[in-house]
Image (cartoon, rainbow, N blue to C red; front, side, top):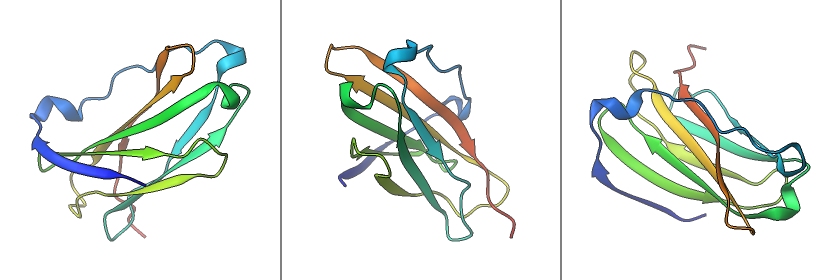
Length: 119
């Protein structure tokens, strides 16, 4: 797992946008779990028909405090990364996942607000 953090984001980075339509034979799935009480957000690569075509899985966390973190997930089913989200129960963090394939195509497969889990 490699992570880096740095630049600050504008408030507009918390607005989700549609994901890409991935051809059925190239489809893979990634699960972004709820933000836990300690701010941790688990992102899991679920695999799929196109798993063998994947060259990289890149995750970007846009925190509600304006900071940004990036990470990579492995290409094997069940690989995961744990991101450090904010601990503010009133402000969700945004998680965006891009999958790049060996043919050079990149697809946005997840773009979600990770809400704070209340229990």
